[in-house]
Image (tube, rainbow, N blue to C red; front, side, top):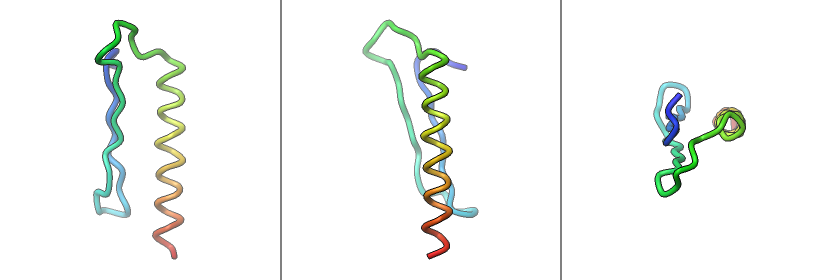
Length: 56
């Protein structure tokens, strides 16, 4: 895991629809395990929301 940024692509099926990016580029504080856990939760919930919307 990098200590400066996280980036993830989101897909709707096989179609790419978003990139979620976060960083600490203007801070000397590295990304922590807590930051990473919250980021993974954001990605998980975003993916579930996209799947739900795709069914409508």
